[in-house]
Length: 300
Image 1: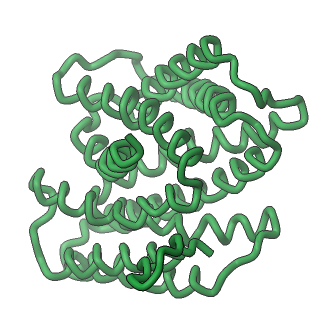
Image 2: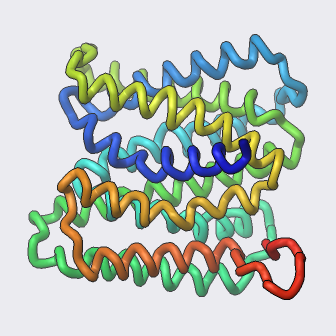
C-alpha cells in the first residue's frame, strides 16, 4: 500500500501542470482556481467533521495557517496556472522542482534551520537543467510572453517555499495537517473568490469534457486524494523520504508534455530533465543504498 501511495502522489503531482494546460482558459484562471479551491476546502471540512482529529490549532496558530493557505494554495497556484498557460508545462514543472532548494532556504530564513551545502550544489544543477531546456527556445520567444511565464513560475515556487516554512512551523506545534489543509484551502478559496468578484468577471462553469475532467482531476485527485496519501506517507516513512518524489517531477512532466504534443523530444529536454532530477535528489540528500550493508538511506 505504501508503494502504491508513493507512486500515486508522484504521478498525480508530476502531471499537475499538464492538467492545467488541458483545462485551458474558457474562463479566467482565477475563476477556475476558485472552483478547485472551494471544492477541495469542502472535502477537507467534511473530513474534519468526520474524523475530528487531534491537534486542533489555537488562536495564535491561525496567522501561520493563513500564510500557509495564501502562499501554498492561493497565490502560488495562481502564479503556476498563469505560468503554465504562458509557457510550457515541462518548463513550469522543472522550475517548480526548484522548491527542494528554495524550501530549505526559507526554513533557514524564517525558522533558523541548518542549511546544508548539498542544497547549493543541487540548486546549481537544477538551475542548469532549466537553462538547458529554455536555451533552444530563446529564438522562438514570443516577445515577453515566455519570459513572463518563467518569472511567474519562479515567483510561484518561491511562494510555495514560504508556505512550506509556515507549514513546518505548524507541524512543529503538532497542528493536525488535516485541520491546516481544511483552513488553508478555505482561506485560499475565499481570497480567490474575492479576486474574482473584484475583477467583475461573469461566473459560469464551462461544461466541456476537457474542462470538467481537468477540474475534477485537479480537485479530487491532485488536491484531495494525493494530499491524504501524502500525509499517510509522511506518517509511515517520514517527510524526508516522502519528499524524494519531487526529484522525479521533471521527468514525469517532460514525458507528459511530449505525449500531449506540447514539447518535442530533444537532447535539451532529456539533459534538462535529468539535470533537474539529479539536482533535486542531491538537495534532498538522496543516497544510493549500500550493497554491503542494510543501513537505511541517509536523509541528512
